[in-house]
Length: 132
Image (cartoon, rainbow, N blue to C red; front, side, top):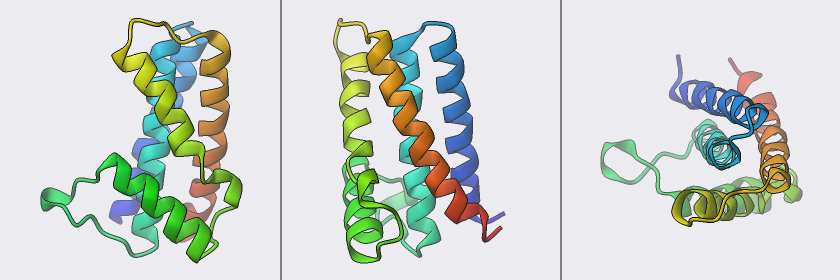
């Protein structure tokens, strides 16, 4: 299995976890998993486009993935709609609050993050999976 498909599978697992966490009213965890679903889907999209991590052991930094997805796949190649450009950074802010502050994520914020994650993962899945 190509590595981008493995990343896509991970993204889909995270999205399922986000759905479950939201349904069980664990909104901080839902926000965290929603972000990672998008992050891993973005890696799959970048790999599908021929990009590889430049870091030792193939790890991807969050800032690099956010920048490359937007610059390379939205603005330069126009593979994905421009509306997806801010999704990673938007959900990242929700995740950071959920993970690193004492403030609990509200149901509304978690729902918005989850909705954006569904949209993002679905868009990437359609493109990456069609080549499987």
